[in-house]
Image (cartoon, rainbow, N blue to C red; front, side, top):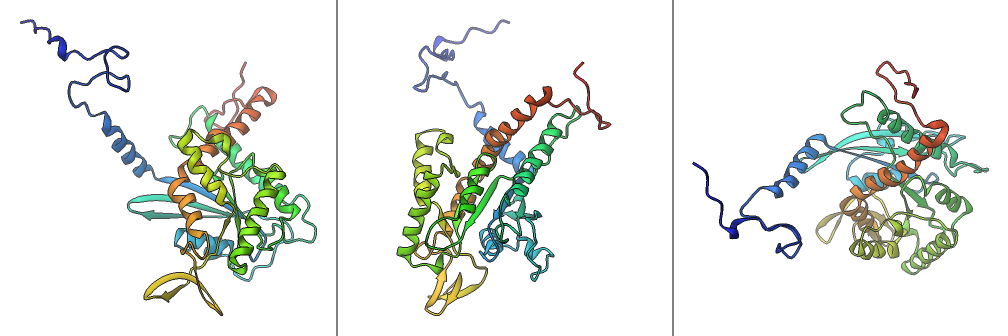
Length: 336
């Protein structure tokens, strides 16, 4: 028997006719579209995340300590088998170490890329070149995997998602080396400048130095993350403007705990008291952590893929007619 036609009131309204305020069709009952978020969450939880962070700055600025403080675990290379008394290399070296860290059932493979030797020589001319070469080599690795005829289900991602650049707390102005590095690499990696060991300055000195650094970066044409042109909408712009006004973050790192007012806190002990790392009245570590991990980690990865990597990819594919696909036996296929 033929089913009777449903009453007119039960027929979904075409988009653009008498639909909801959003312009969509009226649903007659629960479909389950909203479960896609949970489906995506489950798949992502199974796959896990990759996050690759680079630290750059001359020795003695507390790079390893800050990273250990950020991720509340021993993630720096100095905690992964490298001797603490190693000599400063004569040239810039690139050393990386990976850890899998887990929180709330979410696994993340964290790779820390260190650059010992940077800025430690009498002549630091072109000391950024090995770092730039390393960043591009990771893009090249990813690109070669992409053009394979038989691609892996999940391409290993070793691209640098974020570079924390440590500015010495001189209280005066940026060194030419600081400006040159950030200017040359800001178009291939997300640079986040921080003022290291901020507890060596008074609050007034710190604020004056931050303003001077921001002005010098602007005058020199240095772009740091988050760049204004990458703001998606007015809400993003409003949030990122507040962050840009705070940068560079003046930070203190410590993996030692002290008792303060009956509570255990991470801090640095000084002759006049405890500098509490996570106290926003003492330094801006908490702001850096919230920004880097809790609000912008995914965006750092997306900007790396959609902007920096795509720029590299387009350039490579335009060179010499582009890369040929690589067959399963490792040979490149001809376009002919």
